[in-house]
Image (cartoon, rainbow, N blue to C red; front, side):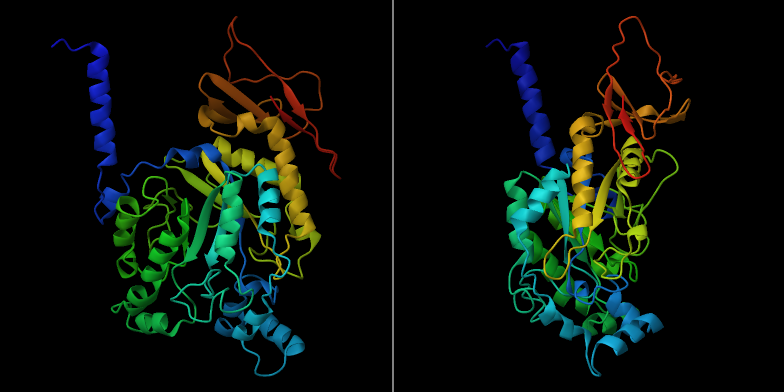
Length: 427
């Protein structure tokens, strides 16, 4: 029988595909860190972070309200409670006031889609331990048994996926005042009762039920990854879970893990590297510069304006990162108009300039300060030069790109008439 070259190529391709699909990861960092990052994550570039929970009810200070009130015993938080709530009022008493009565997941999804974001990450559970779904491991401290009496994670996920956006879930490993966790902590993390009875069963249930495209882990820093059994969970996630081929994870899986192990790197909150990192990374940023959760006492001067957000996003993408921008909804389920305005403004900019953002790669030079500051991105043989300030002149020079007779230059201009009269250009 004669075998053609095309048949040999097909055979080699099938062998390669079978080998890739058959990869099994062992529960150690050397194996897990070798897993290729699913391609969709690097292509999407821009996502929305949503911090929502019982902390949205007091809506004072930050989403760390419970800790600052009862853990750190901050005078400003104690004074807030003394002035506004009766003696004996506990943090759990806020949960029934978490009504979410105006929560319309389709409306949220429309806003997120209009922002140009390609993925959304919702807090399934913050450090307070309250789950935004009916977790069987969080009896009466979840959004189905208490407060909204609905599955917030499931409802938003359905709306997000109808718009072909990727859906991710934030999950805090630790819980500030969970007595089982505190007992493990007291033992110097020599016992793992909290991990065995609460953290890991709940995380497995979350993945099996909602099939998230991304898991944004947090609350890991008090204990090593061996306490959390992080490598065991990730091996299951990458090998046998229903999302094993598409799921993306971050780097917060135990003390000393961040910026070292996991899928992509978050490193610290609002991580801003000074040069091109050698690993895929993400900057999480919040429109409210003081808090991730909604604050009733926030001031306009404490919010990022639209030009600042766009400049930050361009910087991140030029250095090979993803930009995850946070908004904190109100306890009744509304996204504040100022937050919505920022998101829709980003979407308007991306409609014009998205070609220079989505699915791009860092160029050989990421930035230059020539006539005006310029950031570069690339895609195949195309190089994009992005200006985030008005050149204020008719001609200027780019020093880094080397042109030839066949070079084609296209110009796209998008003006923003903000209070500061700034303009934004994409070239």
